[in-house]
Length: 236
Image 1: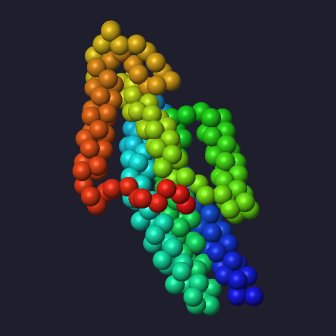
Image 2: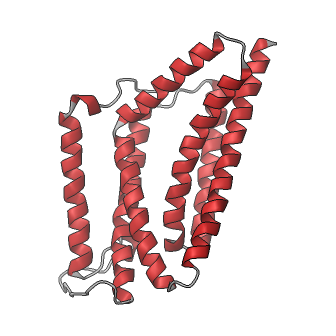
Image 3: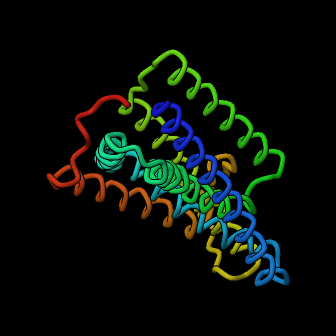
């Protein structure tokens, strides 16, 4: 009976985290519509593209820093162990709520920045595929006891997310150039690769080169700083 109560607390907290994430998404949508309703769509797309690029790069570096995931995992395990030793339902539900809402809030901020820069069909198809993948992973973990290898997962997703951020910073600057908010100086030797956010202008090229340089510097710094070393736990 105690185990059922604890399981119910976990599911209630996780459900509350999901509902709170959805509520946050709706609130942000209403907020941005109220203050940005009359803004030029191209200008809005450029600004949100740059915001999305920053968020994507941040998430990419966060994923690369496996110590963050390890620290959060350790914190949750410690808190959960202490709660399981007691019989109180509320603390366990709160831990489940915070763990789900933490990830949900980050995901919402990411999609708020991305949404104006991609088509609705791509947005919803991406959400659908991501949700289906999460359900599959949950079934494999909860039903079959699968242990997800964190290192390959984090490395692969961090590279994909970083490439998306690289694309968005190019697209964002290009959109701002189209509405005359950023100067445009042609670099004829550069190709036009819209799928990668590469355009033949000095402004987009220098921004992307700067992004790569800053990222390399941060990775070297994280590697040298012992406090930022990745977790030794290879799986969840």
